[in-house]
Length: 251
Image: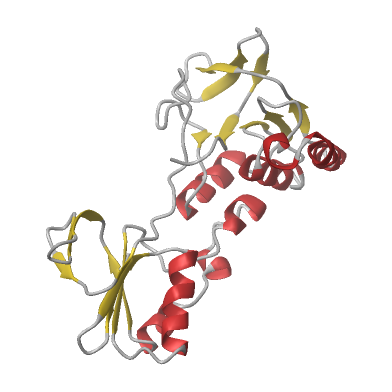
C-alpha cells in the first residue's frame, strides 16, 4: 500500500509496478509530502513480466529503480503486511503490530497465483510443483531445471503459461516442454480460435508440445520420492514430469 503525507496529507500503497508508477508521478508532479509504501515482499518494485517471459531471478536486472532512488526521493519502503484497515479512523494495522495513519490510501495489492485444488497440485504438497509470481519462485524453477534436459509440464495456456513454456523451450538444455490447456487452442477465451492457433504454431516451432482440450486429474510423485513424477489427466493420459508449473490464474 501507499501512504502519502503533504504537510497534513499522506498516502499508503502496496508495492508493485502500479505503485511504482504512482509514487514516481507524485514526485514528478511536485508532491512534497510523506510517501510510505507497505509491502510484504522483501525487494523494491520490479518488472514482474520478466519472471515468466525470461525466468530472470536476478533482482538487479529487473528492478524498476535502485533502493537509493527511493531513498533520495523520500519514499519510505516498509517491509510488512497489512492485516486490517480502519477506514473511519484512517489507520492501517500490520502483521508486525504497527499502525500507520493516512489521509490518502491507494490499494494496489495485485493477485496471488492459484494452485489447482487437486491431489499433488496444491501449493507445497509435492516438490518441483511451482506457481510463478516472485523472484523466489523463479529462482526455485531455475534450480529445478538445472543444466540437463528436463520434462516440464506447464498447466495453463494463457499468458503466464505460454510465456514460461516458450522461455524454457528456448534454453540451451533443450527441455521437453508440454503445455496442458482446457480450451481448443491457447488463449482462445481472450483472442479467439484463429489467433490462438497462430500462437500455438509459433511455440510449436520453438519445440513446445500442446495437449489441449484437457482436464487435469492429479499429479503423482516419483516412486520413493516427494518430488513430482507425472501429471494425470481425466482421460487417462499420463505425462511424465520432472517439474510442473501452474499458470492457472490469480485469486
